[in-house]
Image (cartoon, rainbow, N blue to C red):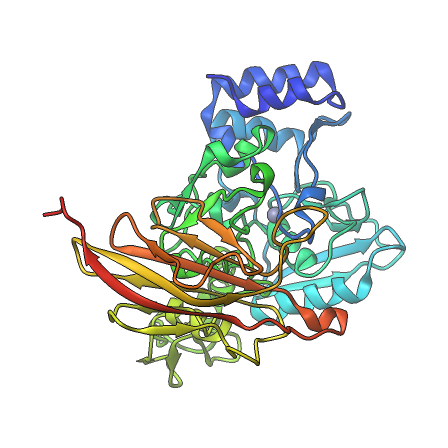
Length: 458
Ligand SMILES: [Zn+2]
């Protein structure tokens, strides 16, 4: 089997030749290595993310946003170790991470806020080192061309976290890596939640969608995880790479920019913070229900969708609650004859970024049919001849990764879209006009859902 890295090497001239040859040989030998080949979506412009696999002079290996020590690299190849074995040391119930900011250009406001976010939700503490402190085991925040981190702790040497060109969720995401977390789409259970279309990934990037043998501690897969990619990350010409099996999350996945409940629970389980807190709170067993857990002040940290001191009332599933909060226009429509309109139709379309999914679901052996009475959103750009940030995508069902994209007035009145099977899916997205001091002056759309029998179906 020719590995993605092999192809990548042949296309990339900046690699150190002797060492990359070693990597290629070992990769072919050990599939397990691919587990750890990951990229980062923390960058606002994913195309600007680093692409190289670099073996450095000290033997460490940089793959996209994750840096492996020479020892780690060799251990991956030989023993298939998990991130669990690279946790930071813990003493008296506290993981105290000493850190240094070794580059004056590091955005300390963003860094401090990321550190504070992890401290607030875990038993991990960060202590800035004094100038005179000569310890060697510390987290080193610096700027080195782009945004990357190690997975977990490097014993006996600084653990580097580079925060160059690392906006928005970047610092929180990278610290997540440095504390031991992998990307969501690399989890061992990812195939239950997403379909990865390898053919749609830029050839040099395929290895970044490999799956790892992760231990998930019964923490569910979260499309809204801090560690989840967007669905088109590193797609050829922006093609879709991941299809969400829960289609409501198709365009929402990767938007999570905070430490989600499940991110925190996973981290607290990995570092056994929860065990210590239970003990300190004199609890023999976990009193918090429905995926909640006892946190440091002895109250329950509850997932979305639950209420009550002990998260005992399951009002709705976590995923339903996510949709309600972050994509309230997302809906599943199953009533034939239903009329749907875009938000604010026809004269108050939202001017802020709005995205949602409408799933039209017919009975078995019935086709979903959506007929448009009106359609108007921002037209495609004349210079690039493509729809911009405002568009409507129509997909026939989840087994088809790509739908057709429409904008402007490209759907004429009376046009009917029919599904191959029982489902028709609309993904709507509009631009954030307020960013440019503008208003959305387009009407949106109005359509009707009907069904019709599929002749050969039984
Ligand atoms: Zn990452």
